Amino acid sequence: MDCIFCKIISGEKKGRKIYEDELVYAFEDINPQAPVHILLVPKKHIPTLLDLKEKDKELMGHLYMIANRLAKERGVADRGFRTLINCNPESGQTVYHIHLHLLGGRMMHWPPG
Ligand code: AMP
Ligand code: ZN
Image (cartoon, rainbow, N blue to C red; front, side):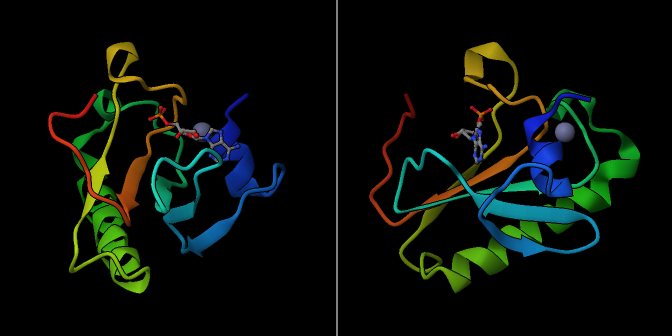
């Protein structure tokens, strides 16, 4: 499968790894949109949020708990940060392996662009 995030997870392509466990992999976004911009991905290839199944509930909960931990470790927890998952073209999704963006370290705007 030609998936850039699967290649980063397997080590075939180099990524700036931040965290890894049996289910989840987290790395620095290559084109950061904030001082902290981490991508958290399940190791399992799931293309979009719409492809999640009932059995993935625990996995996605775990992903958010790692986001919680990394936000604290990177010092953005108290000042605030944003997590988001883009889904399909109008959201701006460009990589079709589900990923949670963790953005922080600057003032965020609302509504998002
Ligand atoms: P999205 O637009 O939600 O699909 O987000 C894809 C994100 O992946 C973008 O923020 C890209 O900068 C990031 N990205 C693409 N290729 C790489 C890569 N090789 N390593 C790290 N981040 C990447
Ligand atoms: Zn993948």
